[in-house]
Image (tube, rainbow, N blue to C red; front, side):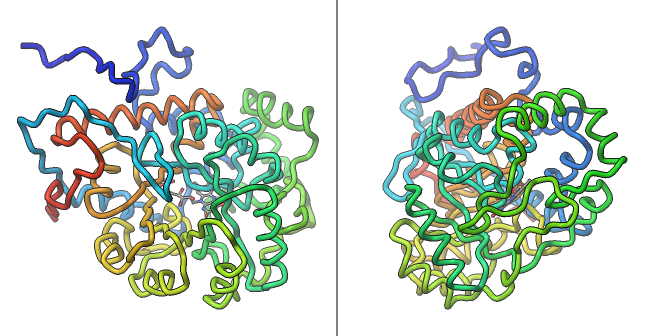
Length: 406
Ligand SMILES: Cc1cc2nc3c(=O)[nH]c(=O)nc-3n(C[C@H](O)[C@H](O)[C@H](O)COP(=O)(O)O)c2cc1C
């Protein structure tokens, strides 16, 4: 008998569109990693390096990624899996899939209108997304584009500035605030220096040549942005507008981030009415402190291997952090690329999984349609893997479905 069963018609997900239904440039995108190769050709070197790059030796990224190979899947058979659904709840809302897209700065320079592209794509797919503090579109203009979008702050250890920003985010209607805590200072990203990327971007002859040799990006993203809305600014670092994207003598205000402490977390918790998430936890002790401070959820992450090199892999510490997290939602990211990765993290106790760079590359090469195609590719993988694991819902996943093999 053929194992090529007809595509399921339960309305969960429509199986892969036939090649003819997709625009030409997306037809060869069969897995999330395919977007990276296409984006490498499309983007100037400085931007491709900024997105793909990691800190120092790249070990934190590699171990975050390779930790998924430390576990093998243990399927169960002869279970009726015809009613399977990957719909999954987080903070009382049911999403179409158990994964989301984490905050990524610079989306609107990698892709035309990138911040809203991400907001629209995640809302259309009914998965969570998150606007970065390093974004270039006013948060007030992004919120209406996607009701599933959260806001992530890079806040300083200065309660006056924090209060003003928290008020601004609440006024704009966001219901979930993510505080990133693994950037007390910027990581040592040598690749940015080598490729001429900085924030703000300083235009040099070398950089101009880099842009000019990527004309599709230059015209379709940069020139189009300048023509439709003028010079982009770092709009969301503080309650007031930050510096422009291109500037010679200006700097983003990253002052006093190294003073941010649990005292600020306590003050934010008192002030912020919505869901409050801390992003950047790798130690069980910090998960306990987060719980004691009334935080609603934590992200176990190495920031995609972009901050502390040799930081421990999120998947490695997931079980011990889950064990002390109480009612907090435990989210994980860094190096997740396949449906099997998502399911391994969920089986080991994650409540939700986030996938970054591939969606930034997708936005760069094909805007909202490409991001939604990427979401669908990952959903298709999860659906197939659920069937072969013998489960009908994400809730049925248990640690018995994975085995540590090295
Ligand atoms: C280009 C880029 C920009 C990012 N900007 C932010 C940011 O502004 N705030 C933040 O908390 N994390 C940021 N991150 C980290 C992501 O939120 C996420 O933790 C990481 O990308 C996950 O790893 P992955 O890309 O391997 O999936 C950024 C990551 C990338 C690749």
